[in-house]
Length: 254
Picture 1: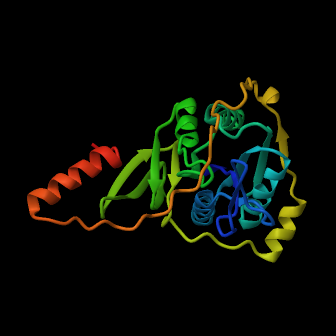
Picture 2: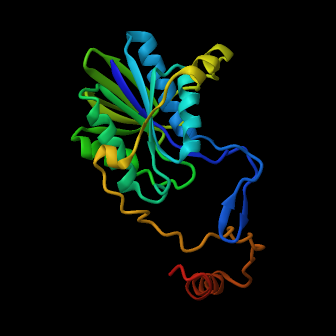
């Protein structure tokens, strides 16, 4: 089975995040692989262990983004492709076009895996856009995954129940928390990954036109602190009137 996994580098979710001059900062901590993408890499490795095959990991970003490719290689991926692009944050169109171009260049593939969303922007658009560009179906937010022959079966949460979906390969599937427990890279795996080549390509190589970031972050602010609760006085009709007035005039919810 030929599997492609799309990964992204994000800030460390365990690090202390601060807000300075409108920017989120995680001073003193190294960026990591997006946690949802870790589930995707682990799923690919388990499918390879069960049925054999080849795993290629792909990322779009600056030079530092190669670190997540090394992590995936240390976990058990076979090949890695880095799309060298400094201004991809905020442009889901650009990233999805680059990923689709890398995958198409391979000639054939059976399965594309990715995280359900990234923890830094949470857009959840890139994988879906990539599937559309590749002309294949996708299954989102998978919490279970198995492949028999050319038939893929996925499970996902559905309001406390489990939804089961099936489809013919090739498919794109995004991984949700609960799909698996990602493994830690072994020392031997880390050493081997350090020696493996990473293919570097540019947008020009892929024939993708860069339009720059298409999303402008106007402002970033901390959530307001919770105010003390208010106990309404009086009889029931009076309390109802006060509640409606507060929702309409103070909180602008009506």
